[in-house]
Image (tube, rainbow, N blue to C red; front, top):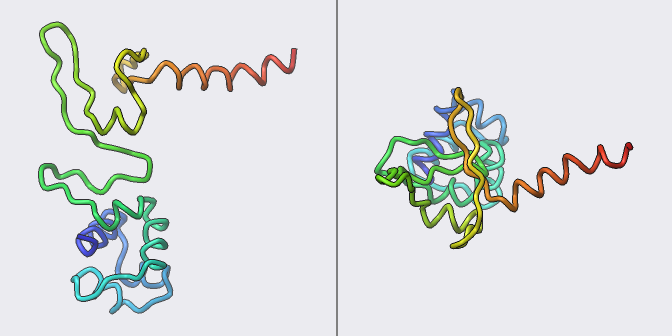
Length: 142
């Protein structure tokens, strides 16, 4: 998997094997072997590649999604799949999303909308923390 991810990321970033090799201070042949699966980068090179491409080390090594053509997600970005709105206007938040954002049954969520960019669902607690950070500097000035 890592070999396919390395090639996909390089092409996604419109880089040549030479450019990646220069960044890591290795030969172009080393990059070619990693991308062909003839060898794999050691841990230090894997961490450097994850940082260079701004992806998690876990995704660099393990990411595989046969169901969509979604590219390897940047660090901190997630694709949770597709959900449908039922006849009562309800949606199901995927389990992985609930786990990452620590959403429990009964939690309050804030639904925000932008007619050009779409909808956003934010846990109320996170929005309150953000608003407190924004308001604090103004409170200190008064």
